[in-house]
Length: 216
Image (cartoon, rainbow, N blue to C red):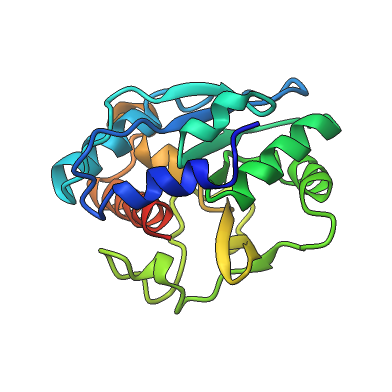
């Protein structure tokens, strides 16, 4: 298992504009959920960040499994899907160590994963519940301002979008975006036919999340 300083070292040498090329990853999990959904989302977010906020991210995200030691190579990991999620205790322990060592996990509910995910997160952080991230948090004020918090990208049940997080020693280590569908807004325009201004909001929010992850 990589030492606690392994990810922190990576984060330390990368300034907010990412002068060095860096890879980010998509999390592959078990349980039958479609971890591979929204295939164009993260590449489009990477392209947007490289163009608009000066990042130097590799164009193609890497796939990494929850229980793999390779997880520690990626300061930012993205997870999505519609359905079931299952972590073994070994996988949960690995994910916990990754997050406490300086890693960051963004989970975007693609509609339907929320009840399964919350059950599995208890294995990762039995002592730390999810809590709503306030609108004054830096994640809503990094490069782009979202004074009202998480934007609503796709409508499903008429519920308000929520940014839920797990904080460790005051650092947001895990962000769960719920009832927003940011990833749908990152996808190629023809996939969901979202208006340009809606896609722009989704991409800007994604850029804030990425930037926060690298700076925190």
